[in-house]
Every structure is written in C-alpha cells, then in structure tokens.
Length: 81
Image (cartoon, rainbow, N blue to C red; front, side, top):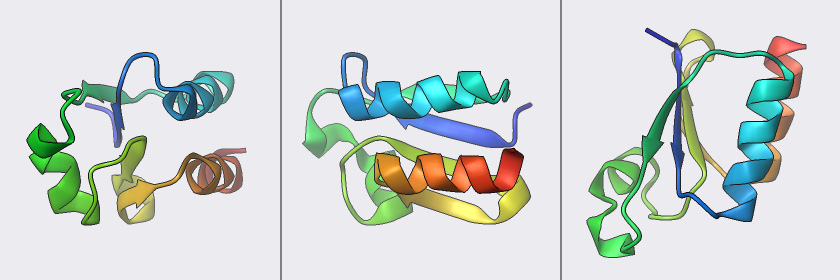
C-alpha cells in the first residue's frame, strides 16, 4: 500500500498539477476520486476542514491532510527530490 493518498476530481486543473508532479517524481500513490458535490466530500472535510481538492496525505512525512496545489507540489519536491 502506498504511503501517499491523493484526493482528486477528474478535470480539476489543480489536481492535474499535483498528479503530474507525483508522476514526474515516480511516486506510488493511492488516488481517491471525490464526489462532484462539495456536500458529499465528508472524507476530505474531516482531513482538512474544507471540501476543496486536491488534498494529499503523506504518512511517511507526517502530512495528515495538505490542501492547495502549490503547497503540495512544494512538499513533494522537498520531500522526494
């Protein structure tokens, strides 16, 4: 099982940015497709207090729910390059 869980929505440009970085760094990750309705994104809300995506959980580095694509990409570059 992967230590990175990536919550995403197909077609989301911010999610694409994070997915591209994950693939560029050749990282294994579990993808969780969230519902289109923000009201149904209870798992993401429990992690971050908000319903937006992308969100990652990176168990190896103690990240329990990081949002914002720029922050996620910066974390991945720092932790895995």
